[in-house]
Length: 194
Image (cartoon, rainbow, N blue to C red; front, side, top):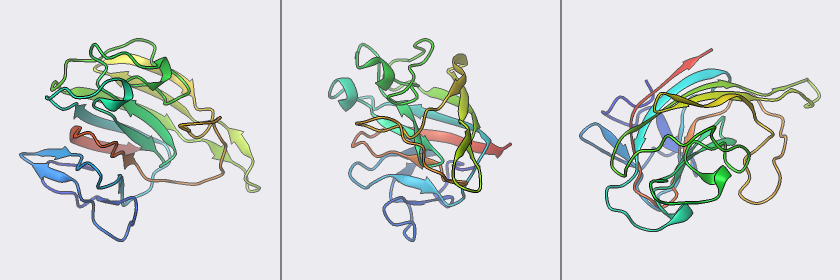
């Protein structure tokens, strides 16, 4: 259980992992504290099943990537986008449930602002040999609100904001939740190593 509604004992600051996570926990809900920085799990993971629930802020502000934006980084490197896409168009591989800048979801399954979304992610980490050479790309299968939006989708490398994906040799890594200056909320986050 990565977030059980009570505390952030499983999380630290991504800027300084020696410091506790500085987001808000109230009434069983975790909310981004804008400008406080990303948070990450204390524990590192490789292959896993991840479940989380999120909602964009009730108050609609901004447009495109500036509205209800956050993200989940698998192993700290591969982002699944969180975004309020309700009547809010953006670039196709930057919408909610996209493998950011690489692969859009197979279909859009978003809800209205303030309604809870579920992400269920089955993740197979990329594999590197002892020389750091990629021997198998990572993949995700993902359900957004119970609908398959990625099916054995291949991850081409890091999910860069600008530029092409990069292959970086690595082992286990944390789950990171992004502070994109929007008060996105989370609940019921759990992971099961595979």
